[in-house]
Length: 77
Image (tube, rainbow, N blue to C red; front, side):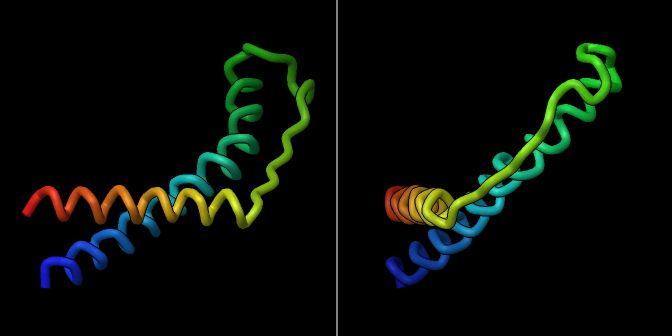
């Protein structure tokens, strides 16, 4: 039961890490230039934004999240 609980927690942290990675890699590159142009830090329309996410980077983030969550639950109990 200990390993099943740790694996379940690992899956949840893997999903959370993958979602966080997608937000960082996709939303921030698109939203940051808009926010900077509104503050006056850059000229409006002076920077282009692009966001490309590969499935390999999402898989790596999910794997790291799973391993971290699994190990944390094993050490916790």
